[in-house]
Image (cartoon, rainbow, N blue to C red; front, top):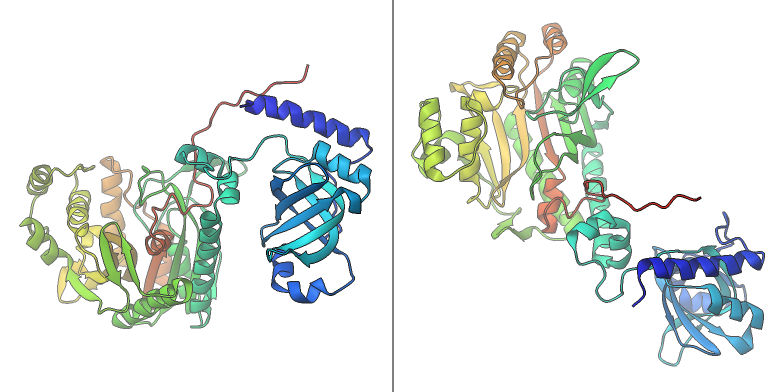
Length: 492
């Protein structure tokens, strides 16, 4: 079998043949007058017309030899068979095709439609034109790219050869379209907020840092979809806003976590907490129904049905029942001892991180759908207190398949309470907690001017990956890969 370099050298010779014939192997324009998908859909009508059909696409198959050649071309909208017959076209044009066209080339073909005796929709080709001469081969048709490292590094080939991946990306686009329309239909307006921030707010994660040369400032890539900015919009009189955008968290990779991903967050003034729960349930059920056409899903050994009753789980009671630890009363040593006895790997030495690690141990056995409620104040620094217990907050998380798939708050709008919370977070930072929330004193000033009662909620593309049934890295368009050294030969 020829090596990739040997194949490239042979294709370079074919490139030279095209140039010698006075043909541009990389023209800018094409005379295509139909997409292949359109031709397949309206084939019966187009087959009867005398107008030439001009298609363009990538050659995925070449069959036959001698005076008859069949090809398959694909343009992203569909695939169709083409037929070249030496005795029904210019012989020099037919000969040049055989001398220069390879699998992977993009070509333009002109001809008429007909149906073969086997019922195959086919274009009888009278003329062809090279649009892009490929120099490297496509993966072998039946095996494709099977190594995940290679699949993700050459994602464009994975998408080309794997229809399932193409359909997944279309489904993901549909997911965000439905999400956007759901909120627009309920009088939310879409906004854009800064992705570069002086302080990162709205979540707890280690940020990526960079430098703003013009202002000579160190800045951070955002870790939430503008939570503190959207709350400023609530103070500014916009009563319902949302944003869908990329966020960045400088943390480890896992089947559930990436450093860059898409999140959605929405905020609504005067929306009561319990009404917010009903809105979220309707939101999730709409996404499942309109994107996937069903409400029942299986993932990670869990089965959940979004049309079922959504149970409520109390944070403190759930952890107590599963581990025997009351997180409101336990000291740091108690939490550490329990985590060690359970074999949980954890980071951080403060109560917030230890409580969160203990909860994450518990959640893996919960299929959902469920609302986790009554979070301790330490793990929800932007939430209002629960009026029945000042140690708890008006927060909920959606639990599906053993994971947190969405988070809501009755947003804290008391400037003095927010200042205290930021002070506690600042102390954690000084103690070395890289995930603690940075204080934003201009945000407190905004609260002093007054922000109405606000319900806020957000979820990320992890939700899509769970409904689709794949880990989040698999559902990324282009997962981040470590650089690979390329043997680039410089021209002498």
